[in-house]
Length: 306
Figure 1 (cartoon, rainbow, N blue to C red):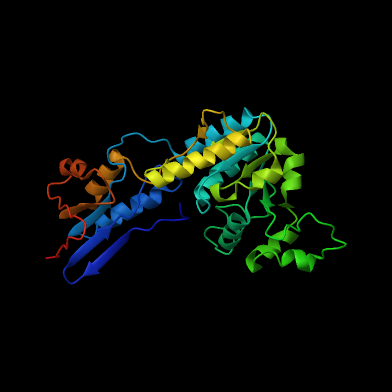
Figure 2 (tube, rainbow, N blue to C red):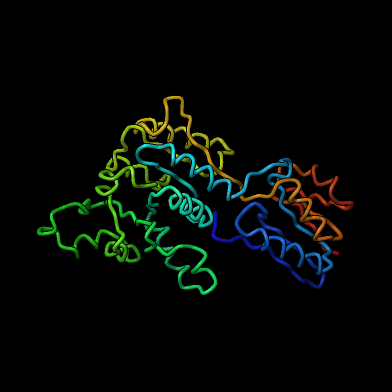
């Protein structure tokens, strides 16, 4: 859910260690993942700490499949498309951005995502990879804050007073030429794919999605009881606004940030470490067939390098 995940090579007096962190080959930059594996293989590693969240899975769609599936949903929606995905996942934002370009709509992002895109524009390497927050296919949504003055009479409530309701980093977006608020979304629902995180569902009170609108959920499924309860609450909100049916069914378009079993095998084979240590997994036994020296470490157990 972050703009980038890093693996590490750690050289110590007791041995050389590779740490995969979360790794996959079905995103937008599989070559970068392979470069890390190749570098591991060139280091004669003593230990490889390898994640295996989805080592028991063999199939995965790609980030480009997400883009295609989102395009299909948008094309089949008459009015507003509301979506959610991890706020900081710019690769997923790019999937939605490409989809709106293909469908003639505009992607409406929040100020946090606009700020991230603005920061990436300062990078010579990435400014052409991700769109600018002032891209013609993007609108920046500014929500009403605690004072609720955004839509009040400017003759009474000055710009200075209205801006004081926003944090310093947000204020510049009020002056963006592609700024929108709930009034713009409400009046032009057929034109937009509207990003609305789980923590901003109250914005739908103002937006008032029309009939024949739809909802796309592009984030991980719940994996503990607290997340399941949160999801049920979110579904009740969306049912209330008519975005999903009463049975709670919604459009799920997501691909994991973790590699499948065949991808993890590629990592292990390519790294060619002397010892393999499974981490971040509930399926440690799957590693036994992938390496001849698997060391499993339990919670609170200390592993001495030698």
